[in-house]
Amino acid sequence: MGVTDVSFIVRLAATLLAILALAVLGRGAARLLRQPEVVGEIMAGLFAGPLVVAVLGGGALDSLLPARTLDALKLVSEGGLALFLVGTTHKLRLGVRGPVRRAAGWVAAGASVPSLVAGTLLAAWLVRWGGADVRGHAPAPAFVLMVAVSLSITAVPVLARILEERGMLDTDTGRAALFGAIIIDIAGWVLLSVAVGFASGSPAGFLRSMEVLAAGVLFALGARRVLASRWGTGLVVRARRHVAAAVGALAITLAFASERLGLTAVFGAVLLGLAVPVTDSAPWESAVSLVTRAGRALVPVFFVVTGVTVLTAGLGGTPWGVVVAVVLLGAVSKIGGGYLGARLGRQGRGRSLTIGVLMNTRGLTELVVLKAGYSAGILSAPLFLAMVVMALATTAMTGPCLGLLKARQARATRVPAGAVP
Image (cartoon, rainbow, N blue to C red; front, side):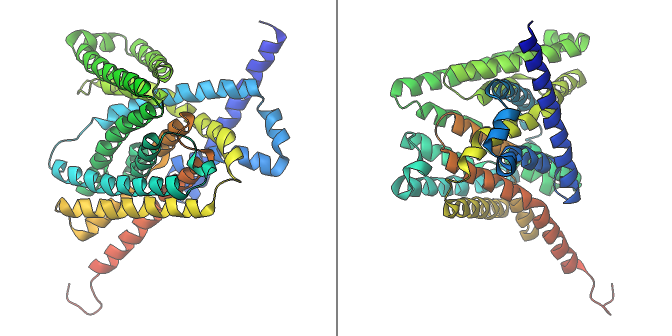
């Protein structure tokens, strides 16, 4: 190993430490603003690069993150994201049963169908009247489906954290919202893969992507049977840490393999998350938790790389009219659709409105979907930025809106002065 290689490793390690320190500052700021910590991480990471460019100029950013270091950070961010998604997808399969199952189905339909329709109308408007710099050059089916999916996502990890922080995780309202989001996100990953398949621009490329999708699903089903067997359970009991390391290595391998085969890297990690058995076995849950924690620690790198590679280039070219339209459509379709779905699921008005607000949470999952669409060439940089603003705005408004609803409910149930309680 030469001096140049040692210098590169030292620079990369120092950059990673700086990014993780930035994440700590973001979490602290989020706590002060009474926002979920992940919102602070997202904001700090995404806007670190644009802030350096605004204050010190583009040359300073190139000095801090030369091409070789930035390429290495991209690999680290994609690997960390793959590890994180294994645990997230594994949790998607938990608990979709019980008394809230019917309500969750209606919530999922209400919070997804209007958003998909709104996204389709937005995409059609951009195809017809949007400029080429915003519309991009992706095939129309891929573009329309990608925009529709982007508006329909609800972030399960961020939503779960909000419910936990507010003591709502074990309530019927929290369960209905979380399980509805689980159903939406599972459908979202499938539709994302279809959109990437359409982006190939040829029937052969699309068919190949669908073949990879079908083969991946069969692999997940077969792997689940093997891992859930007595042999698989015995293995994880005897060597939990070794199994966790093997799962992590396989997640990264599948992520990069699925990308080379024409689908997004997200798909490979999601497949493995679906393959890990959902059982009452504590060793399996513990092994997956080890993988998730490793990925969670590296997720801030994903935000920084996204901010540097996209936001620094796309800030000036995004029409603010498009940003406003995306934010309004995203919020109205989610809150209104979630409310309507909950009402159809026989929930009360107050509870339905709370569920609608919760379904408006997008956060990390939305950013992963958007980055996949951007990397596949479906979303242009200006439209990607507009969608990122929508994801941040809708996630950030969840906490304050829940606070307003809680205060309103408290006033409605307060005993009037002079009345007999």
